[in-house]
Image (cartoon, rainbow, N blue to C red; front, side):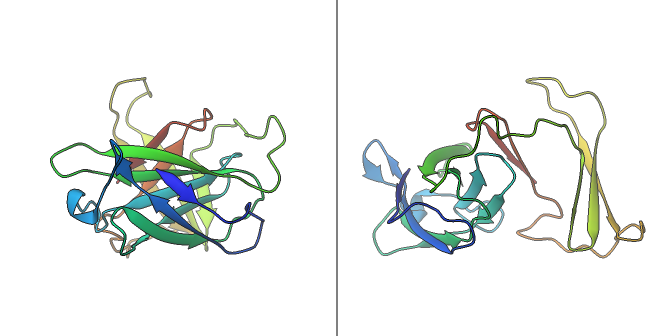
Length: 180
């Protein structure tokens, strides 16, 4: 993946970019990609501190393998873009590119405090695992969504064909999990 950018990222300013996907030097067209959760390309964009995350669905441009997207970064740090794609007849793949920020993150800039809760827009999410996490072993996870008064939310509707989307990044700024 290659990002075409005109300037470094600046916090609070809309940022437009194009991303070109290639395989062995050839452009990867939309026809070569499977639709997964209602899209052929998912862009998972995260800053160096792993605190500003954006899930984008780029628009295909007329040039094969070239897609456009935009977002407004909360930080002026460098961001990584993980293009989540599944080629026809193959498995899910992540292709990584970088967008340089105007001001790099101070070292260390990642808060490594473990958390299984989150809140946004008056909702709270709690994540539970049926067994202990172990490298290389699958584990069933469950999410409980409550409103700001603590009552379970029961009227959720699917987004992109799923009721839950979870994206996790490791502090190596290279490893990602994207599950539904």
